[in-house]
Image (tube, rainbow, N blue to C red; front, side, top):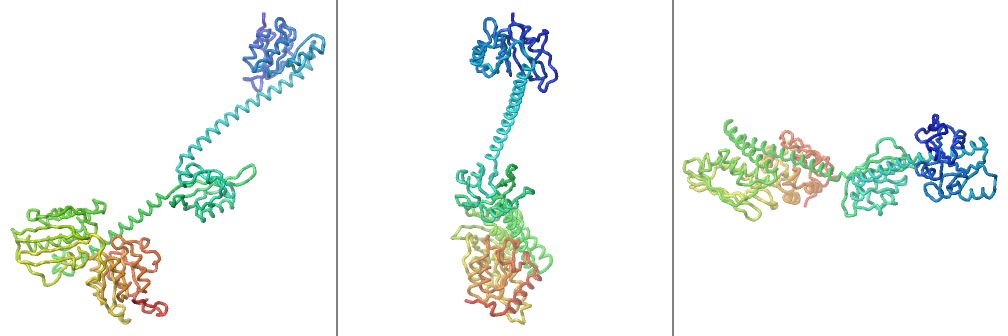
Length: 634
């Protein structure tokens, strides 16, 4: 009967002392058909960290070998049924048991043929009975240490496999993040040779990794030279402390230029000390454009607000000049201000794009300026520009107010017929009053008539009034496109300034470049009051024509003319040596570049602030050496 493979000679499990690997001891296998032999041999082999299993037959031994890993097997040569040599042959025939070291234990004579047969079937050594304990323990120590080293290697292998698994998972995650990140990740060596180029870099820069790997940064011109110099300085400094950041312009193969923020990290290889550079690049082109747009919109908003305030200022001044009493001023000013306010509300609803003419008329009805029961209107649907909306709002207010005071709306039976049609590059508006008192042309042109003329851009030829006994007929043409260049009716040539009258602008010829008729009218009034003659240009073409044909001594230039920049006008003034100042609602950053020395008068302007600027410009021009600043005239 086979002896139990799990029992020692005492019938209990073999004793085990504390072991460095108690959960995974080194195992030896003793195969012998005599129980006492196994017990004796186990007693000689016993040590910490070793477990000895018994097998009483070849079949039992093979069964154990399929379950456990053995560092050494002691096989008795002479066993019934299957001897040790045959068991060794069976072990060599299986992948599972082929590598188990074998020591034969025999009591036979030292027959060289038998020994050769043992070595032939895979034995590593022989132990002869009676067993010498020293020899046995010496040989067992070798395989015990080999087993422990094998277990340690297995443990290290398993740990390395776990580490490799975590490493591969981390690399996969990093690669996924890099490929899907909005950042472009680029790595290069200390010579700025590109060693890694992520899919984010391919998307951002439009160049594949196969075209960039092995190339030096900046070699293909995709990165601006100044940015390349900054990256090189990071590496040359050789420090990993601090956060490296710069901005760069990058050229894509399709010709687009993108603006980027570049973050850099200096890495040092611990093995050889060589430096490398890791770059994280963020495309901030859209953000920069948004910031530029925001700055532009804020500047435009400031300009419109200040232009509106300048118009309010002009309305207040002109209303005050022509008012016969304080009550008259209050009534006229508040009515005009409310008309302007309602127009602003309409434009705010449409985000200052364009407003329907019908809505502008409806606002006048709601304000009580026009009576819907005594008003007929007909015309196509028309969208007005913001400028025309503001101007026409004031004109309709003046027309309705005058009709209520002196015209058709001052009698119970009077009516107003309002019609319009779109002509070539202009909108023609016809206001016809019927059924009111007889009317005649006024003796002088009041501010109300001035406002009506201003609605047409200040051009008298665009406004026509017909005075009939049945009522007045106004025909107003609103320019829809660019106004044709023509000299303003206010333009008057004037001789060169008298040096003795510069302080009061006496005999000076001033060019006012301003597209807001009311503001231009207000400026003109202040300048004429100071003794100057005035030329008004309301668009770029008019301004360039006046500069090229008239002798201008000083100029006032608006920062924007109907949405167009005034750089050409500023350059023309500088080329003709005409001193000038900007009068604008824009900040200096939105004015033509290269003219930082030119003073800026903010809208709404004050006469006491405007006139000293002009006199200073005139004074500087008068004392400047003639040879240094020749006046260029046509």
